[in-house]
Image (cartoon, rainbow, N blue to C red):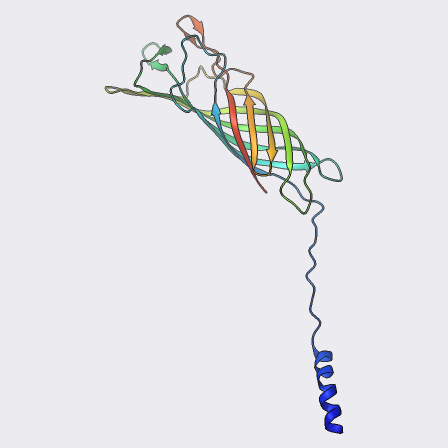
Amino acid sequence: MKKIHFFLLFPLFLLAQQTPVEKTVSVIDSLYREDQFYASLSYNLVKNTPSDFAQNGFSSGITFGFLRDMPLNKKRTWAIATGLGYSYNNLKQNIQIEYFDALDATYYSYIGENTNNKLVLHYLELPLEVRWRNSTPESHKFWRIYTGFKISYLVGSKSSFDTFTEKYTFKNNPDLNKVIVGPYITMGYNTINIYAYYALKPIFKNATLVDEPLKMNSFNLGFQFYIL
């Protein structure tokens, strides 16, 4: 009988000796911040163009940077954000830009077909935006509407054209506006967000094309993506 009692109680003894299984508890971050790194890809439509102006290819716009997200309410659905970014604009169009050292002057004229002609602009950007989103600590998929202004400072430019017989490049044109300000908006769900930006100041500050003031404004339309 003692042996029978031992075999009946032995499993209970083993269970009593087992170490309790630790439960993994997920901690919800109630102080989370959203969308602090961004990048966009857009098409530059260019507005307020001269009469015979034409774009002869895909005029691309690329931006990326960092925004510090600063929530305003307890649910963190409203926030403001500011930061620093970089913008690249490649305007493929039919305005030829040439600088003549002897005259210390820049001349603008229309260029013919079958010519690779472009104006590349590099900006440092300071954005400031108001943010609304219906995000939660548990999910990174949510609706968002972000809108604000950004100040763009021109740090470099290059205009060039390439024909069968000639190649020409002109850097850092002094006729370009150094500082440009404009509103923008980003709206969408999850990773798909429509992006639009319009520059209130023109690209050129002092340029004339065939006795017509050259006043062109950037209008970028595309998509913006966020990380973290």
